[in-house]
Image: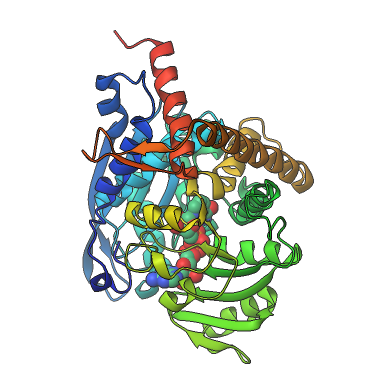
Length: 449
Ligand code: NAD
């Protein structure tokens, strides 16, 4: 997916290259990882590419391309969102499916990694066109998804409504069985879970709170009083903004695809949501300064929350970032070169596989509820979410500390052919834990035949 001003930096942002680089940095620190296993863990298990025609509202016919990819299913059925975006590529979906494998392993939920996407611009499609696209894609996937095979969920520009259409199509094609668990993120009254819509944003805030309590940023040990800038004011960004605000943070800037707004005195997320639903964008809200998405990333704040697209923080702007902590609500928002720059600057990054794991965690709760036809109360769900996220932050932090004690991590020694020693970062440490878990499980299951 492209970023706003790619000419500003010179860096390879191919998604597979980046995910392999992140993998190699972690794998280089795992001594006992078998070479053949490394290849298996880097490559996707199964790729579905589907081309299909759709009759448009005006009677014309258009072809669309969609992907559904399972990266790994050692821990269970594939799990991961489906995104609709005009710039989506198969390589991006592969890298996102990998990320889901590591995320599920890190959070300890019994799913593998998967991801899907359709190349389309939802802003230029009517609801009935979107419904036909979703139904046709689901029917073409046929048995490639299923409650115990691969379970989609919402992502960029897909919603509860999209999930309802996927469920309905799958249910018609597979009558006579409980199909509720085929997809998560459904509307509440058709098998959805309380708390799922809020889960990613809330998980992000819980992870931030726990991370700050570790006192790595002495002057910022709690959310209250923090100045927060959030890029992307969709399902994840807007919910995170509301919970940060509730915890006493000052939301100084938010943005969407059309640009951003800034207020030194702080924004009320509910008022921004009201303005956005009336005007289709946050831009133009009274008593705010209009800024670009690039300016938002570089704005004066304590915590920066990218909650939109990938590769937004790169070698061209990493040095200009003023936040002390970056909380990755979006998937893959930071490039490896930016990681290096930021770690040297002393900026902490709470990586995506920790920061946005709340979504897949409550998706798992929805899947469990669907198996037994139960509907848990939101208080129970949020408590369970909180304990999962806290346990995840703690395990990553404790592991990170053991690297701090041992000294700096050597990164890239095997893969990049450079001997670069640098302080340990949370992304590499989180990946080390996740990769080790998946590798161990693969060997414990025994390689078949
Ligand atoms: P969404 O479609 O609800 O919202 C996306 C937001 O990003 C919108 O406000 C949109 O206007 C904005 N945006 C789009 N292009 C932009 C650009 N060029 N610059 C700035 N903003 C832009 O999507 P979402 O579900 O909130 O997902 C956001 C991110 O969080 C994605 O990276 C997604 O993979 C990740 N994520 C989502 C979930 C989930 O449960 N929805 C879970 C984990 C991770």
